[in-house]
Image (cartoon, rainbow, N blue to C red; front, top):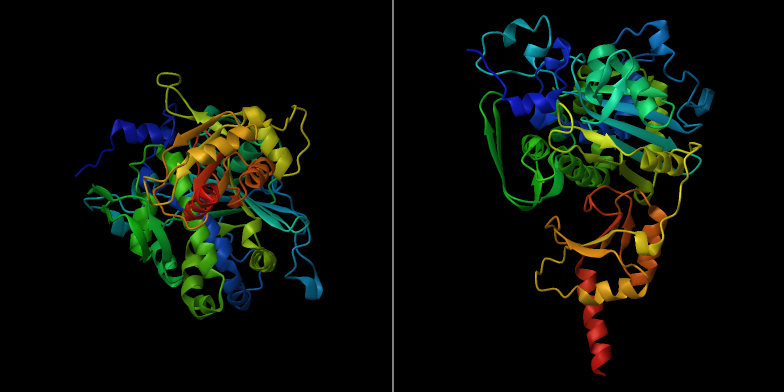
Length: 471
């Protein structure tokens, strides 16, 4: 039986200009790797000791054979101390994380057990499309951790292959060409190390971590017999095991497409970070280690993993910033396929502000009257009066304020989300309204600079205001 993908799925999987680009990939699983990259950071503190006990080799988890010129793409300088300081991160480090979702039809010699099946199984390979890309900056000088998501459909120039989606760089030249492409996209940022993670074992990994407590934003139901993918989730707060978590991460029917999945992944990541860095995780080291060893390719050494682990464990959760490459969706018939079109000026601003890169482009702080502020009702009560909040913002000089659709998750505390990474403006807005928690994430309204996700603390604030007016 021959299994075929729809034309829509093929358009999202890769460009169609070369035979290599026509490899089949799993669209619905692409953004689950955004979580895997970050969960690796969260769990590495629990696995580092076991990794060190297993191997003291300088490249214990490396499965790729990089040529000298490919290896030279990455900064080979030490990132950790020596001697008794081997587990201490000594300088800022940029790690490129790639999530690989490879089907049996994507490889030249698929395993024998995958042949003759009536569906396309996943295989343990790193040679396909990079369905997720994430640049993570560990910065011991500023004591923070920054994650920059790179949408897989980002339109870039891949050296020697022309304009394509960035996810195909790994097919053409592995981690080295991908790192070069990422650097060119992001104003020349350096890439110190890489991690490639395969889809196999993810469900067991999540179970080894004890599952995750997360809010499912809406009912999700989907069936794809060709992949043996069956999704059936109900809206609401719940504890998800490995299988259910994968269903949430693989659901693809979102009004914002793949960007919507990035937003959901960031919510899941925060939940995972809050619960996996605890002593209970230590009891699951053997299970976690077995999954990681079989499905990871990295040029990080065990000692470097220990250094990253120690730093991640000490980083305050409020100092973890989640960003996304600024851009826009391509318009219908604008190109030969659908793309995420990067915004060069905003990328320059992001890299200068968060990755300490110099820039020749003018980077201006936005004035209050030019900021796009989205108000999202997350109180759980559709009758909540938001007008006093809008009036407060207007009086403070914010003229471009509008109501946008919320996630649906009721929040106890208001989140002031720096959607474009503008932490300073978010703090100023927080001071203007007098309540809420500032977060640098991409979970707000896509058209906004700042999204105010109004929680139940606004209801209390509003009641106090009304009471004072009655007196």
